[in-house]
Length: 548
Ligand SMILES: Nc1nc2c(ncn2[C@@H]2O[C@H](COP(=O)(O)OP(=O)(O)OP(=O)(O)O)[C@@H](O)[C@H]2O)c(=O)[nH]1
Image (cartoon, rainbow, N blue to C red; front, top):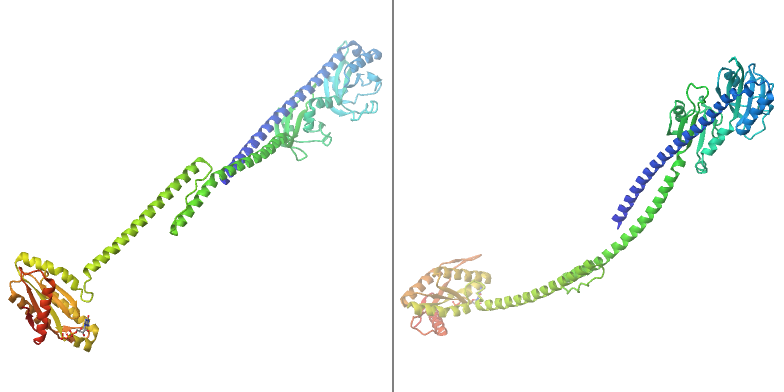
């Protein structure tokens, strides 16, 4: 869920950043285009009005009533009818060649000398447009207005029939018309946007623009480009330090005195241009946050739906493992609800645990049975052998089980076998003198000496205490048995190096022969040998006695 949320947040952030970047780029581009368009619309409008004014002045200079200003009434009538048609013409007048006003609208300045005025001086030489200037002579004569009177002047020479200049006709256009044009150009929406139109003279003086810049000089990149005749738009820092997007163009034609060359700048702040983009950005951020919250909640619900059954399942599995480790029987794995795969998985786990439990208990039962069987067999085996633990030689039981085989072999081989019953002489004395431990050691060495002295197929057993039995097979006769007993006796008489001392003992040996044709009577055979041994004892010990 966390991963999904982070991925969504990063994706959304990236999208917002990209969309915001492109939206701002687009907004800036569109604003610049719009401002450029407004700039050249304003330029065209200014060119049209000044152009028509110069044409008007030229036409006036051709009119007979104006050329022959001798009848001022008629001249004034023409001038005033023109003024009525074009309200922006604040003053129209005719001056003679000396600069004396001979006729003028509203009789203003009639009789006054205007020979020093630039429009008059330029008009003497030809049609001329005189740049923006404050009203001088007319300021007091014209009605008061909210904006100070500012003019541009159009003037043209009046030629006599001899083509000599006999005067100048001049028109003072109120600057108000430029203000009006700018106002018309900027729609309410653009004004609300903070768009401004600046008309700037070639020397950088702002003729039209915001109050704080009016009739002040500015120097901006857009102004420089416009004055060079360029048309376009750019992003620049304004004199007030704000960043503006500015469309620029220039009026008039270089070198044409009938035109006026002004830079026309239409601008608004970049912030205003990007306001929509910023608003879009804010909307997108809110929308993205909302979307991220919805998606994260969805992811959380989904994760919960996925993990809850898995949690329940893993919990049940852990409990089953704990129960098994503790040696108990695990509970059934519950079939969890939730999505299909979890149900299938829990069902499979349940079956697995059940089958494992069945196998385990079957294995335990088998194991128990096996242990029982092993214990029983071990007991049987132990019962069968029960070897003498001190000497490692077969014991009485083993001897009794082996003797029948020896008798069978004697019958098959037609060779007698013999049972030598040995009892150590003086063993008690070794025990008493050197201790039981040494006595035990003597018994072990006595047994080993006996076993080494006979064939592998012959048997040496310890019956009890210091009594041993040797079964000799494959004998030829009683004499043979006797000789072998004598040999053994001689061997046994050699001294024994015990742990702490060296001793010498003897033995009394009773020999009982079993012939191949004899009946198989174990006890009788053993009793005969035992009896012979006692006879040897009685005969002085350390001797061999043959049973009858
Ligand atoms: N160290 C030891 N002594 C044993 C063992 N079994 C029996 N004895 C002792 O062996 C002795 C056997 O007695 P006897 O056979 O009368 O002693 P003996 O000195 O050989 O007498 P004779 O046969 O008459 O020569 C007894 O003192 C028993 O206590 C045993 O496993 N280890």
